[in-house]
Length: 155
Image 1 (tube, rainbow, N blue to C red):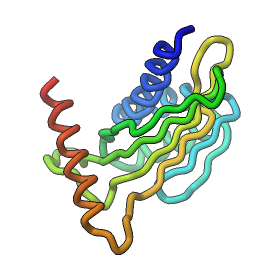
Image 2: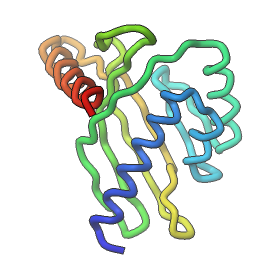
Image 3: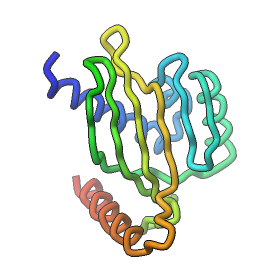
C-alpha cells in the first residue's frame, strides 16, 4: 500500500466517524472502532470497547438532539505502517442553527490501527477547545471552522 492510500484511508475513517455522529448512527459509529477501542468524550467521559461505545451513543442519540460536527484535519502522521495519529479540530452546528457555537469547538485526536487490511479507530479523544484567557484563539478557530462549514455546504 502506498503512503498516499493509507493517508486517504485514515482521513476517510475520521470523516466517517464524524458522519456517523451527524447521522446519529450509534451502531455505525461504534463499528468504526476496534473491538477494544476507546473513546474520550467532550465531557471527559471514557468508554472502552465497541459494545460500551455503541450502548452509550445509543442513549445519547435517543435522549438528545445532538449537534453536527464539521472537522478539519490538522495533521496525519504514521507511527508505523499499521498505526496512524490524526489530529483535528471541530465545531458543532446545532439543529436548525446557521452559526457554530464557539463553546462547542473541540480539539480531537484519533489513533487508527490497520487490522486485517482495514483501518479502525483504536482511540478517539474529543476535548473542548477552551483557550482559557485567549479569546482571540477561540475566535480564530471559530472563523476557520465557519469557512470550512460554508465550503462543505457549497459542495
